[in-house]
Length: 435
Image (cartoon, rainbow, N blue to C red; front, side, top):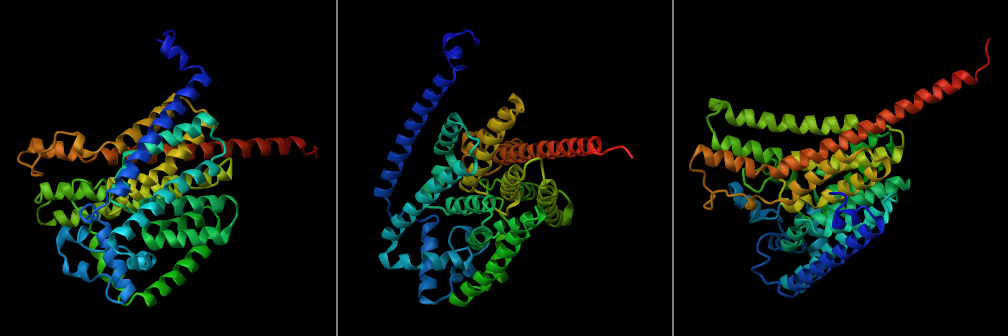
């Protein structure tokens, strides 16, 4: 096949670059058209899923009322779709937009989501200078063609802002800007709690100033926002305990979602202890995956690679063990993807790493609607149950593939560090004069 004309040309670097450029321009034109149409045609109906909840929380914050009132009045899975469930900081940030009305505020927020997306991509290129021209074009192509990106835009989600803050944290850490890195971690953890695990990660990497700075800033920011939003303490006492239980919704791609679906389909699997066993499995999985990630995050042959790979692995692990991982949350995988492409470019470990990365990307791209699942969202037989569990777990498999790939890259870096230390000790012994 390598001798076929079309295939043979792909082995020419200049031809590959031109093909990638054409593809990037094509998908970029689609992204621009899709985004402009969405921005111009926003309606209150199209905002009903999430932004209406953001706006309601911001209105409550602006008027000094309870931002979690709707959540407390909700029940079961309804709490996920009819109420504001984020920390108070997010409501306070959006509060100034409430003066413009729902539609105008949504359009301003949507522009901010686009800016965060492109700002993240530009920072990724700065963070990974090893990316060749082809590598940068491949990253842009993969990003602009990633289904979660469009879902994030469709529902005016906050995931691109998390991506920007985490990417900015890594950028600041690589440049030894301790205060900035700590501030970015605090801001990210104030929008979504899970980035708080970046603090123990930096402590594990002996970047204590960043860890301490992030912790102090986060405490200060939390105190200020709780004072500014009356009743916001309920986020820790009411909201977090309830949303931490997760949901069996078919779109929940985390381990929590999978275990919840199994316990819902087989409520008597362990008799009366089924729910207890499910909670133990979910908690154990979270502790195990985060713990393993922190264990692998140690000094490698190059500190910059260890830092980049460790942050990317942790971002992926947090999506795996989160109480809820909707597909639009997978926008944050663009940082691990960029890290993987850059590492493969430099280390050239073999084709299997590239295929491994591609398989993870493809599985995270695919939505459950690509599978012939029951149209009425009801399971009628064990065959349906098996199909539902398989079709709704594809994203989880993709996340696990990416996570294990990043850990393997960290293992390679650790091995290089061991070889380097051995070579240095041998060279030092040879240089010492005989007694």
